[in-house]
Length: 218
Image (cartoon, rainbow, N blue to C red; front, side, top):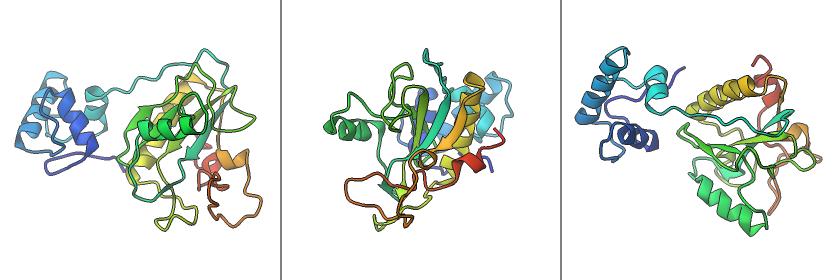
């Protein structure tokens, strides 16, 4: 189901919509935001309904992918090992990864809870997300992957994240038509099989769903 932002909607995506419309970004889809959305729709040949669905959002906030100069053979999906519902940003992960001695965030793209896609490490630079497979891969992570209790792996993707991941992967497929789409666990399987999150270790079930099967038709 397509995600639609409308009168009464709130959140980070609404802020981005407002910024694109040169409005104060308070994150609340009110009367003024609706009026400006309708004006934008009229000016761009879109259905004038004041609703920000996929077509309007794509014109308002186009996410342009850069093609890597590296040869890409794999697109690898991850979770960030974050408890369900906890919002973290690229900058948060960048700080954490640098503490581990990395030069930058390990992922190339990060999908937030609200479905917005954010650039991580420059795609021209080898990532740090899948040991032994970084040189020729693109790392994509969604925020989440751990139950609220912080103890077990779980597919915590919101509807917005599921839609955004699908759209992002379809766009990446256009750039890298021969690249395989897989989950991290397809390269680093859970040896004990219990999905328990050990302290200071990656989730062995990452990304906590069968990415290879889910995206087989892309």
